Length: 147
Image 1 (cartoon, one colour):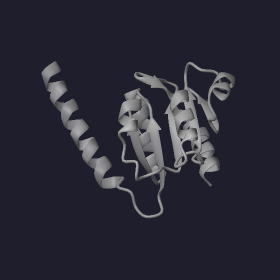
Image 2: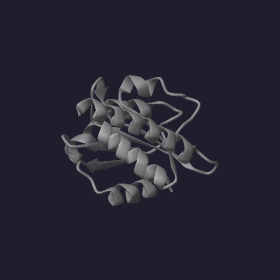
Image 3: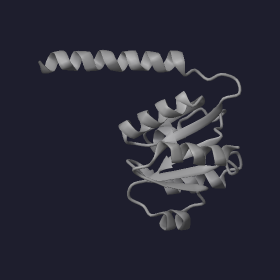
């Protein structure tokens, strides 16, 4: 039974990826969001929900993957988790705020572990969201930051 379940899970993942490619290709005028989040479930949920809200969403699981991104594209907002497998979102926030090309782009930090006061002291994030979060609250804060 497990092997059949594994086959269906793999096929579902492929179908899901094809749907994402077909439905969520960026169009002119879309706002772009970059997410750096190592938890697959949270990253995929944010990507899917924000895509349904007509955002072009690009996600990364690690700081290294983020640093290898296409740097010719800048987002309208960065959403960063604090605890990443190869670094801290607060350090990445400071790096982004120090670079001329990205210094004016809003940064939202999300974390289940950190407290807002500590994050604000350690980086120049424009917003902090505690996990678990209400997606409507996240959407409102994103809209506020990019408009």
